[in-house]
Structure formats: structure tokens, C-alpha cells
Image 1: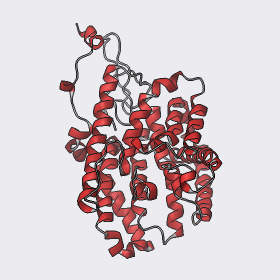
Image 2: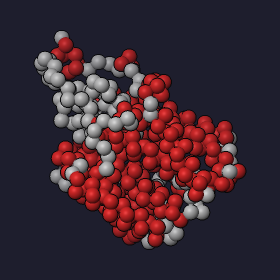
Image 3: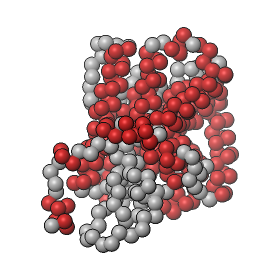
Image 4: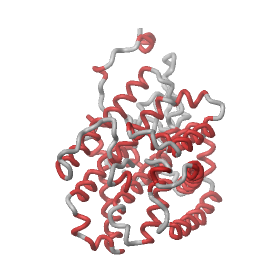
Length: 394
């Protein structure tokens, strides 16, 4: 999902099962039981069977945010092979990379707050996150083997390209009860991320370096409340987001020729990036602050009402997992090298538009239905029914 230590060497880059957009609310204030998605944890099931109350419906704000974030993810990936000759494109890339995955991760954490490890939640964790990880890790590995490196081994412990996010979400969600129990979870998670950035011997299994360095954003989502999202929707916050992003672009343009992209990918420690160990802690805290600020600015401009793309927010797992296949195929076959004009301004604009259209189509309901076997499988046959769940029915 990422460039350099991610996008080309090995990169990242949402879902467990997406709820029905017409029947299942995404707002955590609802008490109606829903099927969880990559960004929506499953709600507690009622202990009794009262008459069903009217559902308030999905909150379009979060579906809009997921769609817009996945478009930015795909566009940033498309910029990776063509941006080196353009300082402006590189600056835009740095700004987008500062907040696009943090925004996704914050929303994932927010909708994981009810996760407590109950049997039905563990089943959804396996079928909605672990299974897609295995399927698409194999898919991306086979594309690499067939088009680039026939001798490359397949390893489910070494996430390739954008599959890292599924592995990370699996780990984060499993640890949710622990973070909900700690008195000061966010500071603790920041300390863990800082320590990881100073530890070059963590290894590459499950891309643990990135799992730990992005952890504070997931924990931030866990500690957020509905009123915090109401706060970023206020008109004054929306206006403040304009100078915020203007300043971020100016800063990125200034530092882009000198700043190592590895800091944004979070796949390596400071020592592996050729920096002193202590810079890992400083950079981790700085990047978390910038990512949180720009995420708030991004959410401030997300539409609060239903739009033409609201329904596409339900299918972002398809857009996320599929958009990397044509991009990696183009990279392996030398498409970007043989079409050098894509590095020119007109080519970069065209590539941006084509990528945005592509990922939009990949989020549509027909694609989601076609991939349901891998992203939303109904595998009740594979699990024993839990006695606690059968009790009320008996």
C-alpha cells in the first residue's frame, strides 16, 4: 500500500463484514444488532427479545468519510511511481500520507469500542478479517510471482503491499478489551509506538513495526465519543481546516526534497532509516500529532448528509483490496517506465482521475456482491453454536 519500504519493496495501505446499508446502522449509539464490517464492530446482542425498535439507519457521515479516504489511498498509490520529478506532487503525497490511513484507523477504532471477544465477534473477526487477509495475500503474491519474481516465496506472516492493514486490524481488535480497561490508553499506546520506532530488531512478521507505530490512531478511535465527531462538524472547525491544510501543504513543499518517505510508511525503525535512535520517539509523537490534526481537518469537510457516493462507503473493502492489483501489475510490467509522460503534470492529472474512477467502480454494489465469498462469507457451517447464544432461543 505504501511506496519505498512499502509500495515497491513491500507495502501495505478497510473489512470484516459490511452491514446492510439499508438495515444496519453504523452509529454506535444504536442498540440494534448488526453484522460487523472492517470499520464497524458488532454491537452487543440484547439479552432478551423485546419488540424491535425503529432503527435510526446508517450515519452517512462515516460512509462518506470511508469512501473519500479510500479514494485518497488509491490516488496516493498511483502517484508513487510518477512523482519523483515533481516537487509539488511529492508535497501533495506527503500531506495525503499523513492522514489518509490514520483517518481509516481512527474510524476503525471508533467502531471497535463494543468488541469484547464474544463468540460471535470472534467468528466475524475470523471470517471478515483473517479470511480476506489470506485470500488477498495469496492473490498479491501470485501476481508478483507471475509478473516479477518467479522465485519469490509465499508467506502469510509477511504482509505484502496493502494487506498489512488487515493483519494490523486483526491484532488491534483482539487487544481492544485491554485498551478499554487501561486508565490512560492513548498515552500508553504512544509510548509503545515510540519504543517500536527505536527498536530495529522487531522483525517483519505480520509487519509488526507498522502495527505498533500506527497503534495510537486505533486507540484514539477507541477513546473518542460521538460528541467528538459532532465537534469536527461545526462550521468554525471546517473553516479552520482551510488554513490547516494550506499550512501543511506549504510545509510539505518545503521539506519534501529532504524528508525520508520511510517516516510516513512506519515500516522501519529510526536506525533502519539511517537516523539516531532518539529521532524515532520525536518523529513518532510529531507524526501522531500531525496525523490527528489533519484527520480532524479531513473529517470536518466530509459531507454530513447522503450523497451520490454514500452507498460506496459500504463497499470500501473491495476498493481497498482490489485497486492495488492493476497498480502492481502496471509496475511489474514496466508500464510507468514506458509511458514516461505520466510523470508530467498532464499525465499526473490524468492518472489521478483514472485512479479515482477505478476505485469508485470497485466500491460499487455489484463488485461487493461478486466478492462476498471472500470479504463477507457466510460460514456458519464452520463454527459450533455457542451455548450462551442458543439459550435465549431455547
